[in-house]
Length: 223
Image 1 (cartoon, one colour):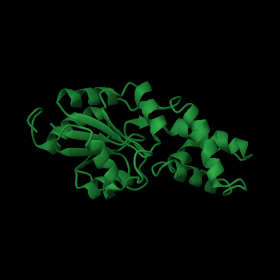
Image 2 (cartoon, helix red, strand yellow):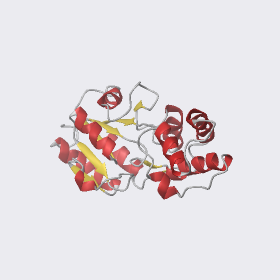
Image 3 (cartoon, helix red, strand yellow):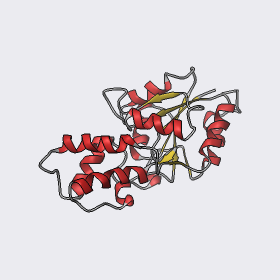
Image 4 (tube, one colour):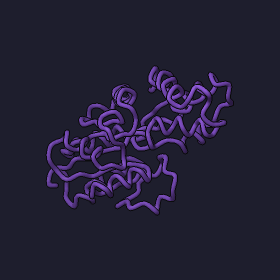
C-alpha cells in the first residue's frame, strides 16, 4: 500500500472558471476590462497572491490602492463561493475509489488557500476518500518546497509516496522530494509536457489506478 498525494487545481478539478469569475469581478470594481478564462489559466499554479499579481499586471498594473488591498478583495470575492464553476475532471471519483479500494492512502497538496480548497473537496464529494490535506495556509512555504508534499503524505499510513500533478511546479516538487511523479495532461501546465520528469503522462483518470500499480511494481495490496 502506498501514499498517493494529489495536486488540486488542474489535477483533480478544473477551477479556472471560478478563479476567472472572481478575477473579473475584482477587475470590474477597478474599472478594468475582463480577462478570458484561458488567460487566467496561465496565471494559476503559484498561489493566490501570484494570481492576483498577474491579473493586475495583465490589465494595467497595480492600482493606487495597492496589491494587498486587491488581494484582500479577491479573497473576499472568491472565498464567498469557490465551488460554482469548479468541477472534478471526468473519472476522478472512480479513480480515487479504485485507489482507496487497492488499499492506498490519499491526500491533497495544493497551493490554494485552505478554506476554498477544503470547501471544494467537500462539495465535489472528494473527501472522503481523500484523507490527508495540506493547503496554501498550512505551512510557511509553498510548492516546490517538498515540505508541503511531506506534510500531506505524513498524514497517511506509512508507505511509498507517489505524487500526481499537472504542472512544472508539481514536477519540481516531486523531484525535490525524490518521489515518482505522474502528470495529468489536461491541466494547467505552461511548458511542453514531455519536458517534465514524469514517470508517466495520462489524459484520463481511468488510466491512473493501473499507472500507480506499474509505478509501485506490484499488484494491489502487495506494494
